[in-house]
Length: 414
Image 1 (tube, one colour):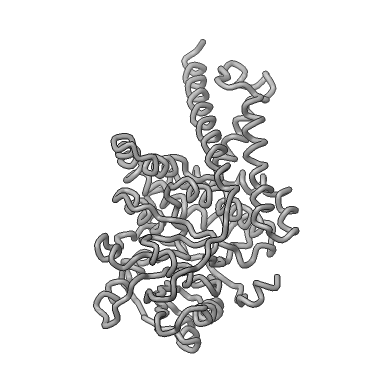
Image 2 (cartoon, rainbow, N blue to C red; image 1 turned 90 degrees about the horizontal axis):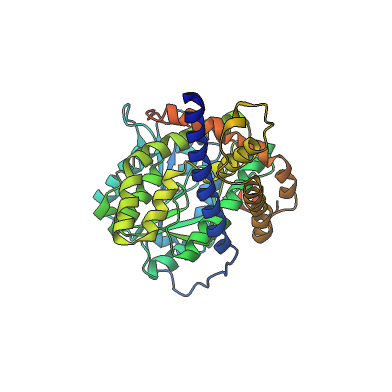
């Protein structure tokens, strides 16, 4: 056997081992996402919130978001809404002020991006006269359910320090791209985040719908200024033994890209930030988890090890296709570590989780038609991750343009 075939054989064996272990791990953990019981609210409103909204040219969507925060089922005196007009060249400031928010104008030619804007805003809050109990971070294109702050107050009163709310989608049926993204989020919310909450593991922070205890923020500092500031902060919390928790009933709704190009740009930024964070924190987390026998840290390290949970589907599908490739290809001489039946079974279980998640989440019947085109969207993760790996040194923030000025009452009627 030639050296080329030996190298190809070794690489293929490692790919099979890695993909097989990760695929089975995902199947086993996701089983714990099936169960969910809505938790009652027992604590009266007592925590004071500073809601931070980083905004760059968001005049089209900032108004409905502020309105949804003003309409919270929570005492108005305990909530301040702070909009960061970050390098805006449109009417974001005027629109936000007209809807009742406190607007802070920021200009900094070097430190651009959401993470820097949040850090700047937190410094202003610490120097201000108002003493807050917690900070809530919401993206400018979001809508927030009326009981969101009530549920964050509940979790804070129970003693939790970092809470991630449910990440819904406000425009799931705009295009095949947005419905594919929506299915991915419904799956992630139920079979990944909710599963880890039931297992007592750390959830992953989603960059919006996030609540953090002020005492912890002052102690740790924000320090998350990369392309995926949410991932950075969450990993640092786990390293300190503080597990971010998931609240499946505290919902925010996000606008998803409607074109494959816009979606690819957004996902490329996510993956560039993911690789950068993994390089710094993956091995320390795994080593600490093994040393301390702390499975939550090991699980967080595994999450950093695999670039994206939906990439699992891409990899397992690829392995199955390679396994059944005709023998006339260059792969005819490589060794199959795991039989074809294993890859077929793993793929069946992984793909069946998608309709199961839709069923459990009771989503609109139109979403099931999106399952037909979902495999095509999932396969686009491969090129995105590959490009992100070779451009992981990029630290330039890429803004996602938002267009849909949907109101919360319109969302309920969809």
